Image (spheres, rainbow, N blue to C red):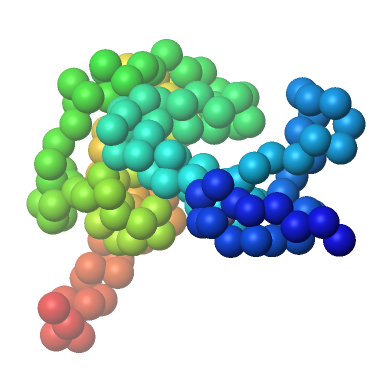
Length: 154
Ligand SMILES: [Zn+2]
């Protein structure tokens, strides 16, 4: 098979390591290999997430409200206006660059879920606190707290 030199990594690779272009005559391949292109997209996405954090959060909330069929009226500016550097519950720092699965990752919580991602109904909090909040009722939490205290847990 024909080989092509990748313009990014400089390696000679088999032609099928280069994606076909749909906007050029049939058989035209890209000049950057699939591995380099995927890496580039990933770093562009990371850059976008870092530089436009509130836009990223707002876009995600919009698509979530579309799939959940709940109201949405947020934008990046509003999210920036309600941002807190720490979790309002645990007071631990919120890290916008944290991995999405990390406990300190900020999550946009809907106070009343069915009211949707709407102004006055959302707040940032840590993923950890959000998970707890979404999984127990006040009564259950009080029962758990009483039980933990009576068993000497901290
Ligand atoms: Zn390459």
